[in-house]
Structure formats: structure tokens, C-alpha cells
Image (cartoon, rainbow, N blue to C red; front, side, top):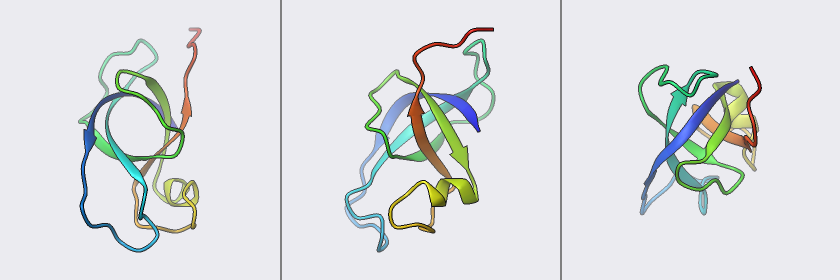
Length: 87
């Protein structure tokens, strides 16, 4: 589980079965100070996040489980919109 900031969108005209209608966003992983912490990645959006939004992501198997139906081929999923980070 990690934080990220939405920095863009991805447009796909064809998707694998199970991901029809899913939205993909480009997310920059960030640390708790909102500083970049790795390269940008594409994540499936399960919460309707907007550009520049701070989001909560899961990766690997948890990302596939966050989608409906389960076990679709994704490596990263947005599962929450972050309102505040208190450090």
C-alpha cells in the first residue's frame, strides 16, 4: 500500500476481458511528504479519482483483487482518495 498523485490518463481502445469500462490513470508514487518515490505507473482507477488527486494504491495481487471481477491482469490499483496526511 502506498501513496501516489494522479498525473495523467491512459486511453485504451481495446482491453482484455474483465477490464472493459475500466479507467486507467498515470500515477506518480510519492512519499508522506508528497515527494516522488519512483517512476510513474499506470493504475486501474476503482474510485473515480481526478487529476492531481492524492490517492491510495495497492499493487500486485491486491490490485487484481480490487477489481470486479477479481484476478484481472493489473499490477496497480487506486483504492482510495486521500483527504489528509498527518506526519
